[in-house]
Image 1 (cartoon, protein in one colour):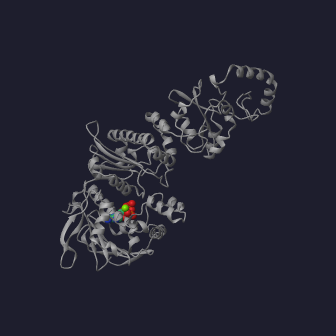
Image 2: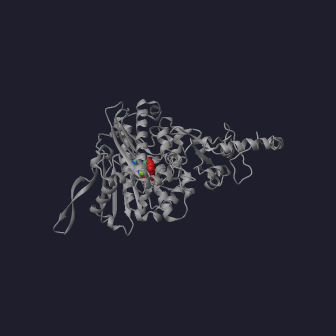
Image 3: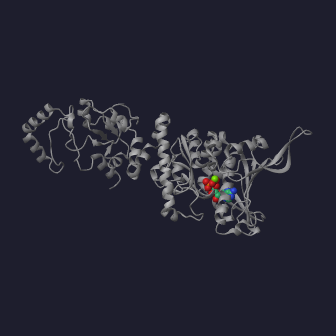
Length: 565
Ligand code: ADP
Ligand code: MG
C-alpha cells in the first residue's frame, strides 16, 4: 500500500554511518564519486538484464547520469535511468550491508580515526557516504519493468532509521536528493561539482550531464541556460589509448574500482589483438593489503566487461588465487554477453586471458623489482606471502615467481626480507652447490637455530624462513638456477665439497669411538627417535634434532598439528 513505514537500519549500518561521518570528513567529496558510481552500476545492470529482455528499456535506451543542484533548497540531486530499485530492494540494499567480510571488517576497527578511515575506504563506503555531507537523503526510484505506481520513496536523516513509501514515478531509474548540512554551501556551485566529477568520475563510460551555465552580466554571476552538457569524457578509460590517459587519471580510476584512498604501486594497460583472443586489460598492484587478504576465497579484484558492457565483479576465473591482490578491468571482445560464472570456468578464451594477464602482472612485478626497488619492497611486505603461494599453484610460471621471492638471511642479519635467490647464488662459496635454509616459527627462532652453527663457522649464508607458507612453498621449490634448496635441519646433511678431508677423517674416528654411546642413546630413546648420529654440524650445542631426509620437517609437523591435522 501507499502507507509510509519507518524501519531501523541494521546495527552494522549504524556503526558504519557513525564512523564514516566522523572519520571521512576530510575526504567528503567522495560521496559524489560513490553516488555516480552506483548510478553507473545501475545502468550497467539494466544493460545486462536487457540482453535477455529488451522491454526493460521502456523505449528509453539512452542511458545517462545527471547531476543538479538547487541553491535555494540547498540540495544536490543525482539522477539515473538505470535498473532502479523495487520497494523490497530499497529496504534491503539501503538498510543493510550485504558485503562479505562485514564481520571481519568491524572486528578490525581500532578506534584510531586515521587507521579506521583507511579501513573504511578499503571496505567501500558506498551509498552511505551521502551522509557525510547531507542531513537528509531522499531516494525516489522505480525498477525497470515495474508499473508506474510501484515506485518507492526512501528517506533518512542518517540517525538510525529510514522510511519507505510507495509513490508513482513515470521514469524508470533512481533519483537521489541530498539535503546539505549547514556548512556545505560550497558544494552548491556548478563549477565545484564539475571539478569533483572530472576528478573522480571522468572514466565513467556513460555521459554525466549538468545544466550548462553562462556568465550573466546583469547579476554578475553564473546563470543556468536550460541546456544540458556532458561534463566527462564518457568513454571507458581502459578503451582509450595509453597516450590519452594521464598518470593521475589512471590513479583515480584505480581508486574508483578499489575503494583505496592511496595511489597504486603500479599499473599495466594492454590491448591484446590479432592472436587467439582479443581483449583489453588494465591491472593494478595496490600499495596496501586489504583486511581480508588471507582469505583465499575473497577474490574481489577483477571486473569483467564484454565489449564495454559490464558483466560481473570479482571474476575470479580471470586471476589465480595467488594474485588475488591485483585489481583491475578486463574487457573481452570474444566472450558472449550472456556469459555466466559456469561458462567462464570452462571457457578456452578465459584461460587464454588469464594466462596472458598473469604474465602481465609478473612482468609488472619484475619491472618494479628492477627499476623501483623501494616500491618492490613495499609490495613484498604487503603481498609477498601471497605471491609465495604461486610457487606451488602455478607450475608454468614457477621460475619467474622464484626470481621474485625475497628472504631474510644470515648475510643481512635483519628480519627484513630483501635477499633474492639470485643474490644468494651470487654469494655462494667456492665448492658450495646448494642453497641452504632454515625454517622456524619466527625470525628469531630461525636466526638462533643450532642447525646454523656449522654454516656460521664456514661462513656459508643461510636463508632464514619463518612465514607460515614457507614450508609448503619449499615443498614445491626443489631448486633454483640448477642449485638444490637444502634444509639445514634435514638428514645426514652433506656439505659436499665444503667439508674438507680432515673433517671427514675426524668424523670417521669419532664415529668409531662413540659407537657404544650412540647405541645406548638409541636404546633409551627408541620410541622417540629413529637413530642417533655423530655430527660435525654443531659448534656450541651438544645435540640437536634433525628430520629424516624424506620425512616432514619438525616445523611442518607442528604447523599441521596446529591446523588440526
Ligand atoms: P555497492 O555499490 O558496493 O554495492 P553501495 O553502498 O554503494 O554498495 O550501494 C548499495 C546498493 O544499493 C547497491 O548494491 C545497489 O543494489 C543499490 N543502489 C545504490 N544506488 C543505486 C542506484 N542509483 N540504482 C539502483 N540501485 C542502487
Ligand atoms: Mg557503490
